Length: 281
Image 1 (cartoon, rainbow, N blue to C red):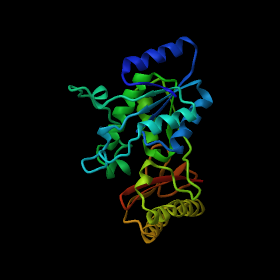
Image 2 (cartoon, rainbow, N blue to C red):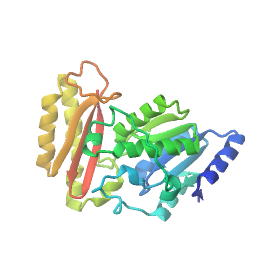
Image 3 (cartoon, rainbow, N blue to C red):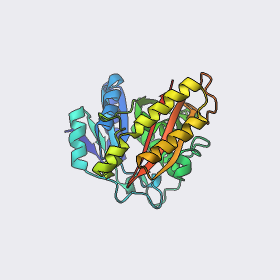
Image 4 (cartoon, helix red, strand yellow):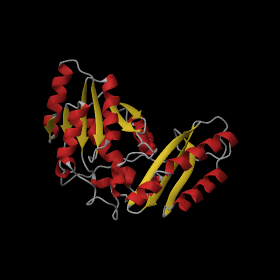
């Protein structure tokens, strides 16, 4: 089993020992409820690192007033077993009080990238993300931190934050892990009933077809509208957004013209809000 530490001083002591022994250190921040997608982040970190820290912390500041903080799945014992199977050597599991002491009053905000898509649909969400990620990067002082490309907007925001604040940690994205039907793995997939799961597994089919059509036509607006209608026809209750955006600055793309772009979607079905994105080649 990996070693488990729950306070910052113990985490830094282990990191200090690893540094003394010449190890390159990776960091994989998670909120627990681990699945194969999370384990792929550890595998990615081990490509360039000899030691990997996994963090488990359900961060309250990135949940809105009516979101699923209390219902968010938690199973520490199962998570530790999975990390052990993936070869993780250290797990940092702080309490809310450790991360946010009584007089905590600092915010970390990234302008622009946080105002669109999930930032618009979930006000304040990314302020919570940048707040906790900045703390974890500072606490761990890792050489590399790995985040999943499924949350591409989050990845872009963290890269901007690290660049702006001169944080000496290399932020790397790991490819989205999907089930056999193409559905992006997510902890919130556990909310889906069998019928909802069958519908959800067709989301990526619509997204990939729209990305192909955009690449062929260069003009995404009408294709995005048609794909939104297709998703609603499948049985999703609503679509928060389906946008073609620049892969780096997340600005809307109305004409592709050889730009690096991605197609982003967030759609709700039952209790689950699913997000996904694919490259537009």
